[in-house]
Length: 442
Image (cartoon, rainbow, N blue to C red; front, side, top):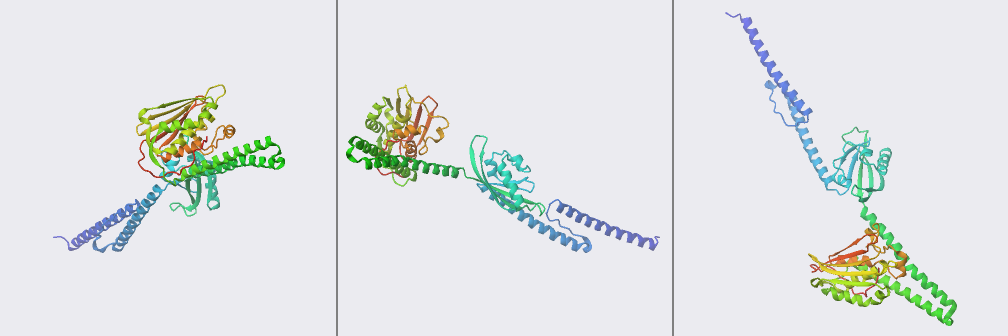
């Protein structure tokens, strides 16, 4: 027979083992939950400790888990919103810490600087070899105030951009509070800069173009005031010079009005069926004295089914006239007879008007700007011949007004070929222009 004391001891040992087993299991579950929380796994773990053991601890851990779940969800939503905002921004965004290491950037920045992968972790000096940018970030970190800078940047494909950069100080939340960072915003203002440069050039050119003939007229007026009508020869010579410069001013004003109306697209084109061969021969008749004066040879090659299009007849006349006068002014080479060839042929969607000469060609460095207002290669000779420097710009804008385009093919000492592409049918009559007498500009 078992001793009651031994039986009681065995019973107590069993109860104690049972309690210790469940206490150990509960502690193991609690430690597992704490380890999951440390690993940022905020999923709820249901704990059911027996006998009410560690109830308060389990309850508090459950509350912590739920709170961390809420914070994690909020952070995920904010991260998603931040990424969506940064991805949709056209400006390049860059975040750097106090050691000038890149912490964050958006897709616009990667595209702007041709990065194949995000330069996260690199220093500004490693990722960007741009002194102005490094200096601006350094000034913002040291002064804790915004800094701005601007610089040109050339991509690997040769394209040059003008960037306006603003650096603002900020605290990076994942760093120590004493460490500061900088948010850098890159604005691509290349087009604005180009437009501003063109505006300055335009104002300077207009001022010069008006000042020259006005100064000549003023000089002859003062001469006439001094000599009076007694000196008949000088009197008539002065009047002729004044009349010539008045005509030059009138042509310049007409051309400025024309190109302004074309660029603003303020009025309607008078669209009708136009016979290109008739318009071309009309222009050749009008300019025959100038052609003979230059001793130029002129050829016309017109495909039979390429002469009829829908267009504004007067504007097409301006295209032919300006192409011809441009060739007569710029394609002359001493000791070489000038040959000009006009050709009109069909394309898949319309027609191409080509004007080719055997002149000196256009230098490669001048070709990108040849259709700008007032841009001339031989400035002095063009002015002597009465050109205003607006002819090619007018051609370009008339072509655009007809939903067409203009291009240039040229190489040094191999002539120049201007190609005006026009649709055969005008699908949309969006705008047009009032009638002005054609101008012979170059």
